[in-house]
Length: 477
Image 1 (tube, one colour):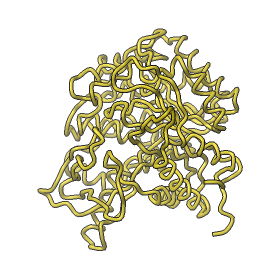
Image 2 (cartoon, helix red, strand yellow):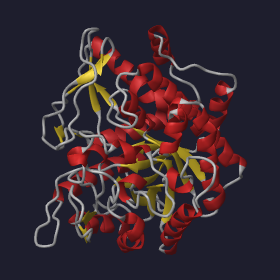
Image 3 (tube, helix red, strand yellow):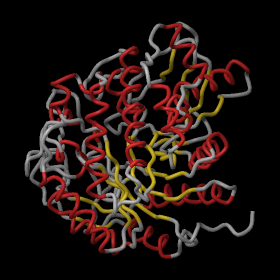
Image 4 (cartoon, helix red, strand yellow):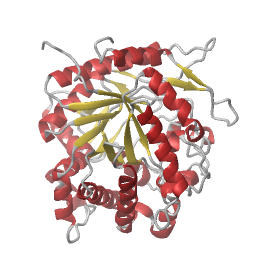
């Protein structure tokens, strides 16, 4: 195709999350979160790392935003810690928490950086888990909506892009199937789908509350989308791919965009006795919210090659949290599908498939199925970075991002309406279960797993590369 350019108002961005960057976990009235408790369980995180201090963004946000401004960043996606705003999850609001985010938003706006706010990036107030088991109770729907409306009313005139949920499929999957995130439950499939139903309802009620306030901004949700390929042209594998898509992808995206669950997946779950239960008003609420859903947020990292999995086949596998390549194992759902290695693609040190064209596939599929605008809310490479003579030469990250930006440009020129591209992440940060050694940022942060490092910020080679990409609006890669 000719005229392969990015739109002139394209938002070149980067992203973070409160627990992963802020630190200050007990400062200025903030309440505890479920992650503050979970990371203290032995063996849950790499070398027992926590977000108590993280990369100290809470105290150094002005320095970090200045680095963004010098890069020319157009948008900064960050999340709000619910427990900073409502230390108990509900009840009395914490003004100091609101002030911190107001200062951060104002700092961004001062430099012409569009703030993009994620309402929930996994750090549930511990008080709500103690009070009614958090997402396991329908009580959370009103508490979440109240929290969201507090932010809309305070910042709605300054923030134009809102994201209700970050990777709902991940925090529920790791929380109730894998045991790797709070509350640490394993193979509780019935509760997994119940929790997701509650999260969808909270999302839906929040979308409608946002629209009722008459704010000019846009609201969506960010989904961790791994598009799939059939392993080969064997019909068994083609059907396995369909099964994977319905259960691993469309279950979430269909609900956001259409307000309903995919039929095949729902029938399968009903037969197993684990399908979510609809109460009066649920159906209408979900359908109405879908009509008011403005964009699909996509966190894209990898694709999946799918093969038939017999009824006695593999289940949940082992994931790689150490960076020792080859330590993850095959996994799937018996009788439905399994994920296998794609011989055409390489992998990162954490065994994540590297597939730039998969981003193009993701955008094309969303455009074809939902006809919605798209925000790429995360895309990046976690790697071992080495500080040498005060510099970080991360050519591998530049190559990774360049290939993905090229694929995104193709998707846009094929008709996909992409509003923004946010890399993960701006600075290095706590990579949840992986500690601090898995680095994603454009800006190196001088800290390791142990506390006490300088926290000095050092731009990597990729920082200067992205600066040129932004200056040229994607024409110089």
